[in-house]
Length: 584
Image (cartoon, rainbow, N blue to C red):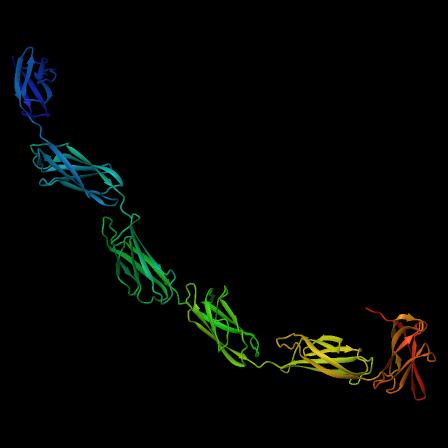
């Protein structure tokens, strides 16, 4: 009986599994065969029907493998164990610091004991993708993994097979993992603004481009400016604040003008090339600045102050705070004033203007705000007429009144020959006020009086109140109104005043008056009736008035008095009352 022992494979690489096959000769089924290798636990296996038993071992060191059966005896074979190859997979990715949106390429290099392995099939895998590439000529396998998500992504390269003749150094299953950190792509921003915000035709416009990367200024960037056919410096370089500016050199047309700012080149790690900003500059028509100059009153007369009013408007809107200089032909006046909220500035002449045409100007010297009205001028001509002549005429009606008769007094007030309406006229005679009235549309004022005594009365009509722009206050006229005697002989009421001391025979005195007597005749005043004691006598004047003062006894105060005067064929008699005088 005997045992044959075969080792497969042999020799073997350390770490590799091998199989020991024992065959009994002749075949002896169910014989327990015990396999022993190195320090590994012995394995006992029953032979099969063909007398064969097998056992597997991990190759560790070179040494004998022994198979022993209780019937067939034993056999041993030397297993040669070679050192295991040093198989290494190296993975790199490019770019080294990718950002979101950037494709990532992974490259795997396979070496065995420091020698590149050609033909290895490498699978590149990420949590969401697997790409298989083959190494070529020892230069490694590369795969485009495309953009990776923000954050950390593991990329693993695993040798899964070989192409062509397998090399003596098998690296199947060997892998390597690298972590790829993807950061947020830089946010490159270009903003474009213009100044002034609301330009008008003819105004230069400054364009300002600001370049930032993740909110930080980008300095040294070349920015190209472009607009619709408008010459301007084509490019500028951003400063430390990331700002580049340019200014138009020719006027922009009215309407919308589109400008762009494009980053052509950038220094530093932040790539902003070809990032573009756009702005629309809306140009409005140049403002229309107007100044109007008016004067008041519209038709002044010589000696009247004149107020000049300048109104400054920009596109129809008031211009506030503009300094306006007024000038006239040698006429002193406040030289300049400032417009108010309504755009109005005023000044008033301080010396009389001469008759004739006087030319005044209002010139805007300075203006606050965006509307420039400097040196805009307005002119007006103030035509001054000669001062009007104020006249008052006075008439009375009837022409020949008698004492006690109502007399109508009419004063007519004219200014430059034109009626003055609403003027107040005072009528008087000496210290006696006869009345007052207001002129009508014809310039006439009417008053009536019965207070004019017989004789020549000087009546005065004086303008004391003015109703129009033509001042006639103080203008007056005198007229003589001749009042004839009354048609009836009349003893006028009289009053007495006590004497001091009041003696019984000379208790009081009174002035007795009779009217209507024949001029030059004697008028006799009697106590009580016409046959009573004579108190006094007087000769009638040319108007038929007669008066005298008489002393009265206490008894004569009680009966009144009687005036008599001779007339052809007899006497005229009139009784008058006699009452105490009221002293106020």
